[in-house]
Length: 273
Image (tube, rainbow, N blue to C red; front, side, top):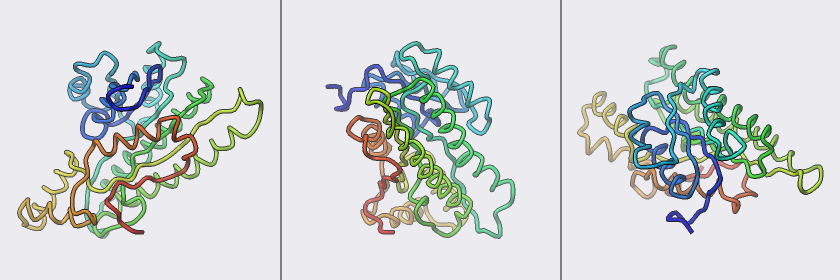
């Protein structure tokens, strides 16, 4: 038994957006559970800071909006001779947040959000699935870190909400495709690959602090009042933690979650849809 309660010894994990916040937290949890973890992001220094002190976390600079860069990421992961595959577990976590009224959302902002939040997960999960299938992994796991706004919307985040709704559609469709992989052939040939999403509410991370600063700038509210506005979105009246998301990812990646596929696990304190 490891410190997290899960044992991923012999497994390999690829996490995008692994240089800070939720991605960094997940990387450490998986490494502490015995996995070899490749973390991707755009800033080498932050990736190296996450990997410091861990012999089984490997940083790789990558822009997830670029197709070749994502392929290079999985080539790098495959070269780590810890398992036969490039990755058994792939977590599309990289994302950005920005807000603006629809009529003030310019094309540049729209393109940037869609590129990182939707095209990035598409490229990551597509490449991850291809590598998992090629290596004939028996317990492949694809996980997208979405948002509560994948299920509902709020004012002034039309581009962000659209990107996260898109991620959920991607996950649900892919999940039906991989489900069919385990329905034919002999028992030894059957595969258990799942695709799921995690949909957290506002998190106590750097990204949310940027959102609070944006509210302060645009409304003149104090930081405390701006934070309270975000707290109000949850019935528990709080921000959620990166650790809560990491624990959900560990579970979805575990053998015990083999029957969970095409789901969007909410971490939002009980919002109803």
